[in-house]
Image (cartoon, rainbow, N blue to C red; front, side, top):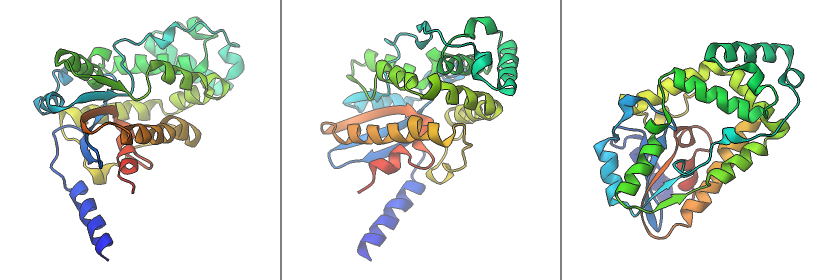
Length: 267
């Protein structure tokens, strides 16, 4: 009964904790304190500068932890692998949808015709974000990286750009499921981006709201891109030296089933 009451109190504290003014959660591990921030990799100009409260947290931290140091990363769009034409890899409906999105975004369809499907998906997603007014240099993790360097804070990578690129290359059929999901959930993804922008500009979500997000990945991709990475990050974060850390990961890793905060607090 005592353990049940303690667990209930811990859950209550998480649900009703004081909001930071941005999507974040404080996690206490036996050896360290984590300020877990839900990052957006591209942001609007109105998301600059970072909240003073977050910069203060960074100033007090022993290090900044990010998925990858994107300020030094090479572009994944420089890949030159040649694949079969997309018309042969996609169903007629999916190929028609792709042509429509390329036309909307001003992408030359001939330019992407023989690229790996994961690379085409990333190009579409990046262009969609730009059309919504988002910019890479306004992303939360990018701004945190710049602030960390100004404050001369150590930077720790959970994965690194090379690992992320290797993951994309390991996707089935050169990332065809990622491209199909991108096309299928096009409008949902746009609404999700706008929702996450709202978390930074208006009302951040509380713990109890985190299951209301729409799915933008198939179950297989969700396992590869979300759940497996969350479990790997959990192990890395649990092995940190004692200290205080600001940890910036994609906001969706903080919410939904198998999310990183819940994994970190497992006994």
